[in-house]
Length: 185
Picture 1 (cartoon, rainbow, N blue to C red):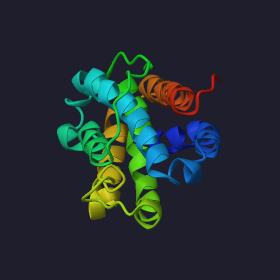
Picture 2 (picture 1 turned 30 degrees about the vertical axis):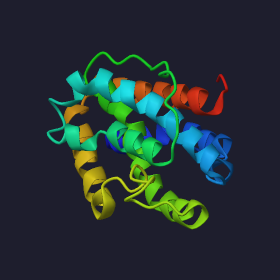
Picture 3 (picture 1 turned 120 degrees about the vertical axis):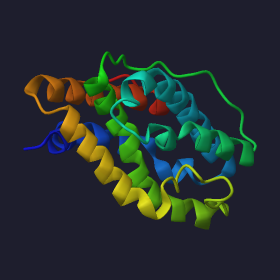
Picture 4 (picture 1 turned 180 degrees about the horizontal axis):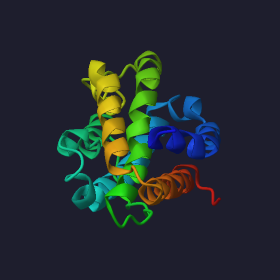
């Protein structure tokens, strides 16, 4: 079994729990609730992408193009939202743990494909105005996910590195859930 499969299996329950607690229909029901959600995401992504960059840039050649904080900041400006204080992040100590943590953020791009039509229909936003984060990678989302998976498999081949990636993914799910949902796990 590859590390990507192990990551998915190890974090599946946390993923489902957070998805349920997010109550995304409520978060996307009004411009104000959507704006608050985007502000929360920005407060998580911006410090995470900056803190983890030193570990991810050597293993992901396209890391700068994967950063979602600029998209979230643009979306927040487009909907007239207000930035909030940064979230508390899980610690990463090496490329393997950074890849595991980033697995959570990259995985959200897959969900964005399904959420973009909801935001377009409900709030009248689009990839060009207010929902660029949800549209990140556009038609290349599958290709980008595959390339990310290849990097994980290449750099997390040993049981030790895979274990660090899995532990960091779990910690990131918990931190993100606590931040976005206001719950402690």
